[in-house]
Length: 215
Image (cartoon, rainbow, N blue to C red; front, side, top):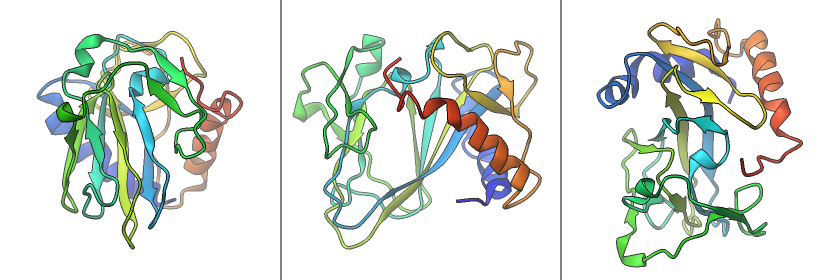
């Protein structure tokens, strides 16, 4: 998906910044907008994991938004949450390298999960869900004849810093960055903007050798 300016306008200035600012700081940066597709009849799943597992952030204050572009339900592998798991802080992960996992190393939280506590995140097209980076979540296979499609975008306050792992860069979504903890990418000038695509590729390149290893 190369319509970068449209993505930024939608997810940088409008939704879900207003909702996030109700629970976080007045200044916010965002990173890593990506299109998520679970193809029809796809047996792969996403293991139970925490987003905080990947980027070496301090403090762990990042909110992920998942915006449904199609209806999302249990049949097509909707995301599920493990309530209150964020209260356990960062949970140890094991790398299973499960061949049926859509995570690069099959990372999975090392805890016992009570199936009765799981909450499926069922969404209609156009709806969205927000979760903290310490909340354990996962998703199942798509058993239907149609793709499950959504947009994932992450936001954090500008006072958060990265302490380890390949460097990540941001775009300032709102407010003023007084901390300068991250390299700030430029706002895309338009859809299919070659400069923005090049910057994105350069920002993503350091993560490839580690295959998004556990931080």
